[in-house]
Amino acid sequence: MNAQSWPTEIRLGKERRTLIVVFDDGARFELSAEMLRVMSPSAEVQGHSESERKTVGGKRNVSIIKVDAVGNYAVRIGFDDMHDSGIYSWTLLRELGQNAEAKFASYLTDLAAKGLDRDKQGAK
Image (cartoon, rainbow, N blue to C red):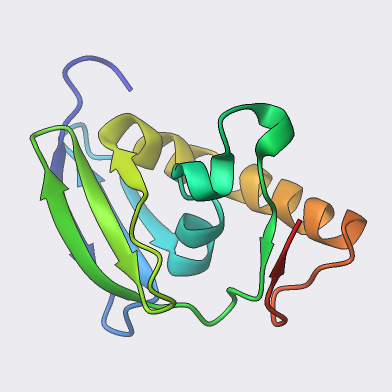
């Protein structure tokens, strides 16, 4: 994201399972609630180092219940599993949008390697 890029629209999809983000350069992303939840930038998921990062399963059907502005640089997303501690910067939202397919494929690989799945709760 260049220094000039700024979101012009952030809204929930009608089923609350996607977050639609449009940037002022025309880039538009539909980010799934599942991906946003399992890739939350919170310490609960990311830990304080790469070795502490958790892979979270069982979030296929998670929904977004709220999106709150954090200053002029990010949003805090609340999910129906009560997770709401991740702060998603504009840069992170853009990165997730641009790399969604690869990031989600990596997540699926991590799930399988750790014996987790998208429908059963668990984290490792």
